[in-house]
Image (cartoon, rainbow, N blue to C red; front, side):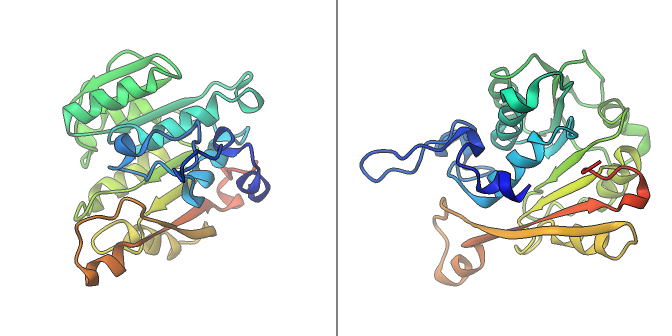
Length: 251
């Protein structure tokens, strides 16, 4: 994983741009599209997500809050690279309550595969990429889409909830239904974001934190100086299920 993160070909090979503009990386959407989720620039977080998805054993990724598809685009790009995509029956899925954003994500992901667009709690047609226009389920009675997505478990779950989206019930149901082999959690240092999920998992036997880091928020705008100092760096963590659970990502 570390050698991939440092490889010049990661993210499709980032090429310097002219006139001092940010590097262009094929796996990243441009900044205007990516602003809701990731910066659109080369970062350690984007590299870790791309490299995780390119592992031969990684075949299913749940980008739980898919938004407009920026992070899903990184995953799809990694899945469809020649070295990792041959013979790989991959799947990507995610939820987005905003219908306009959900349609945007579905459109983005047509670059890589057919896309199933599901609405609400209804299970739709199967496809390599599933975008669910609706809430992440919190109750088992409403979890038909999650059970369909995770019918064979999930290799990686990307968690990046919005501000004050606490998702206690959703997280417990996700862990029960999907039994992920790894969690990549973004924005763990920000107030009222997903850091509590990292702390919860680390209290349990069977989980190990193998990588952490920070990525600068290149899109930081409109915040006063005090808040700017808090939001300027976005911390992330990679947690993997212990070998004893039988679903270690490295196996």
